[in-house]
Length: 123
Image (cartoon, rainbow, N blue to C red):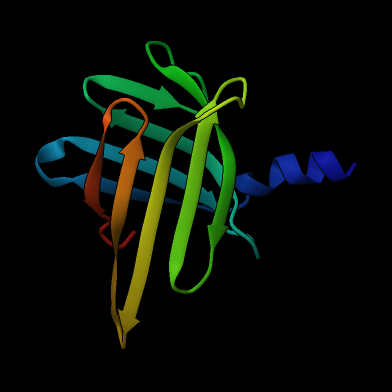
């Protein structure tokens, strides 16, 4: 029963965080569920002419959310290969806010492909 509740959680209310490198060299779209803890519902990742997705879209390489952490100052997500044998990508974001202004950015690295500074406009 607990497993069913966990599987249904991301479907409640969702928000997409889209981060990209300058010139479109790399991008990541993380669909988050609104819960008390970080709940990554789906990830789409593009770089170097390749695409990775957690939902196994045709033409993409399947990845898994290995681990994720978020607090008021940062968000960290590691994505693994389908067999959970190695880390494929790492997203490291820093968040800042002051009054009604919000900014988020950091780095995206993909094993064997590259590393980029990314910015994430407010969702």
